[in-house]
Length: 332
Image 1 (cartoon, rainbow, N blue to C red):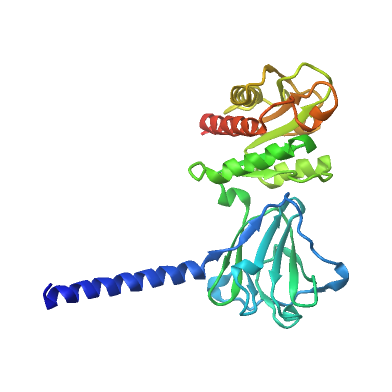
Image 2: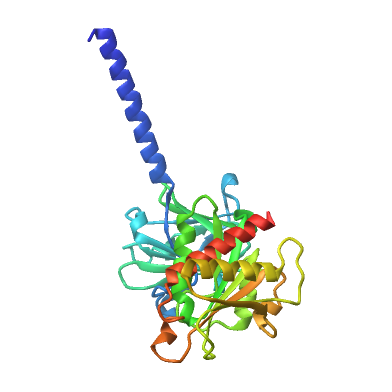
């Protein structure tokens, strides 16, 4: 190899190294923070006795308007931060293992956002672990990044501003597993980018008013309710639809048929029919394509924890997801 050729190789290697380092720095500077979903298992927030109102600096740089900026101790990395999006309660919680007790008594958050109604720091121990608790005036999607300036930057969006396809899913205790499976299927499907909002993913009481509010607040395009039928009917799938509204692009009966058909095909469980929902309070007040899927569990007993006995709930979740894809194809 000649000196000229060696110089070319050295230059190319240097350029490659510079580009690689730049990419590493960029990815480090915009590292996303681990997010747990709103209706998931709640993290330990701590006692309100150890809470204090956060300091707020409204002198926001021009390029950071409408952004929530949270300072961090220098020692904090993304591994020390968990963001919990509690959209059912219109709350954002950020758990930080800061290792500096009282850090947020002296360091203000920076924001000009008027959607934040309250901002509180709850000390979880005496070594600096805290929960930053933000009450918002509505349900918002958010994006959070960890910057090289040792801050968290949070941007908020109304769901329809961020997502083209939104589905609200209402579940009872029997279908919590199916809801989690559905969430995992959606997270793996990057091509369709469908956002699911769940009324519950944990064994907790959710009122009817909260359920109806979620459908409205998340600006859902579709509503699916999943519940068990313990009436003792034959084991199988029945899908109910709202017969009080006629929708042009996709009517409720069509959507219910898609849900039942796809779930029956995926799970192998018998389809028992598509019928009007009657006095179903959630469906009857919905003005978007809505359906309630019920699986008969037969006689009460161990099967009450496993709808349809040996039904593969992974397959039911796949069927629901396939029905959602089919519905959006018709609507679009």
